[in-house]
Length: 316
Length: 274
Image: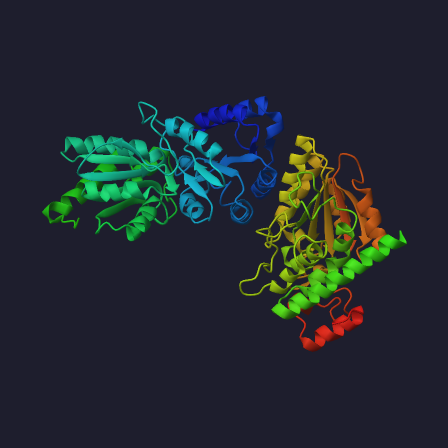
């Protein structure tokens, strides 16, 4: 996803002279082409994320569209107050990009697991939160946020994520993408876990459960219409995220359900427990341990669906 | 020069008068922090900053950032005196439904560039504005007024490292070195000395001045940048609560607001009518 991001950002920067890129001394073998082509619109600020975010605000208040780029929690939590007071309060045109969303940095350990970022970024007033599901969505998301006014958070995976979309989907900030149709349950995924979710849906079909899959690439503003449609058209919703079970996609969907007039819904939230990873291992291993492998998702959905049984009765 | 001295002095007096009334009316804190920067602000807004109250968003204007956002009453006062907004707004300082918050806010307030309040944010934002100006070939300058307590923040020194590396000679940091921070003297809490040496070591061209001597303030502000390709740092030795005998050098006046009698006495000392 990071390669898709930087190539797209270069494409955007060719068309829009306001676009700058700031990095916190990270981006080796990724951001060099941008620096090469736009040396006057690139700064490596050093290992200083608070400063990077403050500088980005100063540039944005001077008319620039500024992307800040670092890994995991460095461009968000390390400088959270600058994100809140400087970027968000001033509604500054700063786009915060984190590489390594979720468990992408696997065996590097818990400092490099971005597993609370969506919850925290989502609570910031004025912030738009986007987590593309595959490299195709990463391209489309980058183009979209480059034109989207105000603060944005773009949560990327890392490198080598499988492609989910066979053709380029219609991508709009705040509009979920229907990746797969199905009439029994709706699986809503955000970020790179979309691939596993789609794979799980294929397996569920073999068991006779038809799962609709939504890529909820924008957590904020949330596509509440898509949530409402899921409640009305299928028997249950299962949210899937590579993020703490607290405050992310599942919570956003629940928040939406509390204000939607949908007459109740059956919902299950899949995510990471409220705990630091105790195990060491790669992203797939850690996902497996936390029930987010294809099999893990499949099993939970299958049991949940069956437990609903004939008792499912929704008021329309 | 005499004329300018008188003009600065008169503006500083108005700032102090407004600050006393504003903090009194709102029962607000930070009067000491406002009084220590009154003379610096008067000199800045009366003849140094290229700003225009009729065009607060003029692209080529000099930028002024109050990084010590708690000193905002003094900035609101000077902006009102210079005609950026009506003086009546000052009466709404920290009032229910008012326009002016107790830490500086730019929202809806002409002349305020940036909202601050948490320390250690302003210099980085100033760096961003300064490097934008440099790379866009614009001539504006960026002045950032910091507190001494704010020099405890690591983020201040991140920005202090950045500016010389990028040769931001359009950036001027002014440190209001009144020697008293939130919970004690700077010496007791976290000694900054040698403060000028620290800024020099980071690559800034530094000048120390008496922050209440209009001649020295004016001289320093008019000579920036002190060196080509280097950011300038003015360490202004000031007195917290300057101008009101019972507030000077008193930690308590970081928090207290003058009551009726104290207001009367303070105004009398300044020689202004109620």
